Length: 408
Image 1 (cartoon, rainbow, N blue to C red):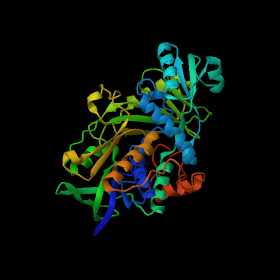
Image 2 (cartoon, rainbow, N blue to C red):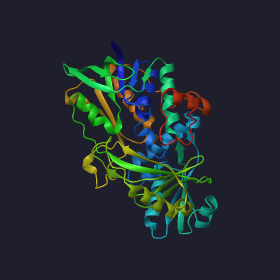
Image 3 (cartoon, helix red, strand yellow):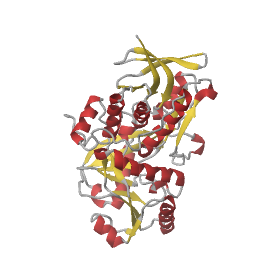
Image 4 (cartoon, rainbow, N blue to C red):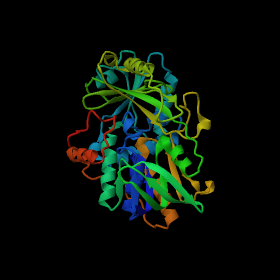
């Protein structure tokens, strides 16, 4: 069987489905294929933090401004895909006060609201916060439930004429006369798709998909562990105010708290070690900020793989690689109708999708503007309906498994 589409998006995570929704809103005929359930890759295996940008303010001010801009957009359009918790950056005894001051100043320059708190005020905000707290400041961090976010984007894509196919792995790509001619898709699609344009939005797997088209795209994936523990006392996202290291983020869900994370290079995003030391270290380090989590029962543990690009910037643990995103047109690689979108963060998925859709529309001669920053996602204020979308697309990821109703 042969099918035709204007744009084929490979990858059903936040960015891929975000690209599809953006294109569908512009009237483009778009099809998404994903080898597993939606958000089964990196999107659904994160800690679920909606960044304020403060984490990057001193080292990547452009990325920080992108984060705070998208943070504000998602609060407007994503409803119950977001949980507004607030965030706290905490300097402990032994952490650099100069680093704290530099971070706070950088937030101001990036346009991120940051309110300084003394130790007593911080502990009033978080009663279980360690007595080793020296300084803190509040920022507008929040929590994303990626399963809902991705599924809502998918539902809107289909409502506007697009097609979304989970459990549809790409098996082969045929390039003819310098362009992708056909993409062989298995699983529930089981067809040859003839696209006018192809977007590779497969994250850490982007190099493998590009290779099917004869394109060399070097990724530098790094794994990180998330540990969800039985701790439900209300608190904001906690960030250790020090140079990025293992175990420096604590993310509250509704009945559990997620501790993370590590950064360990991997050669294959499908086949890598899950090391016990990462779990132990994450708990130990996070407990320095919030001591009760040290003895809390571990409910769930999962690893995610970051879709990092630009390996030349990497240190040993690849923390030095930019968390920015890149839209890569492969015309110079000999494939005129293929673009990859790599890097980035869940927080900036919509902006990544907009930039990619702009590029594709330019290539196709489509004169239509992006509307995703102002169009509210479907059922955004109806969590039961959102969970129905998740079930429809087989998209329940590890990040929010404690929140999503699997019977919806």
